[in-house]
Image (cartoon, rainbow, N blue to C red):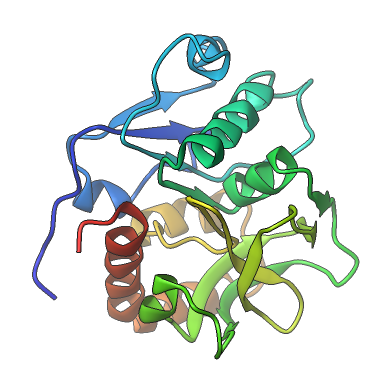
Length: 231
């Protein structure tokens, strides 16, 4: 697939140093990334409606849960910004924790340490066949997931577009798209995750990712194109 570059006026919200934008930066090299742990107040004006939204927003994942305002005090601002995106029809791609924040922002709920257990590694997802949504043009059967929390109730008027055999993996809430998996993942990011807290099957997880890497990269590009309306 030929390379594409997203519009410059994109804001990427990063919650943790080990959860960077990764592959998304290949398509949005001029985006502004805000590293929230460095300045907890960086988005307060935007959250309060005192500063205009950019043309699009990406909210990345992280190790806390969607309700962990005491640990990460900026999460309330991020939820407010996602709510504004929905109200003002600004495209937003929310990833893993980002999707869970969008769900809570819209009045839905998230199960912390979800009962059916975590999903780690290549995960099969199943798309709604009759969904009338451009995201169905970017369907991927296998994605890379790494999460223990999960959506338990979507916001009113949100639509689930894809699920694994356990959890919602793709949802649309107006202009806000949420994915539970990690389209931004690169080999370097995954290697760092596995080295920090190595599971017994770390080598297999990495090998599985490498075998699927080209398909995963293509899916990330197509997802960005559709969410941000470049094609």
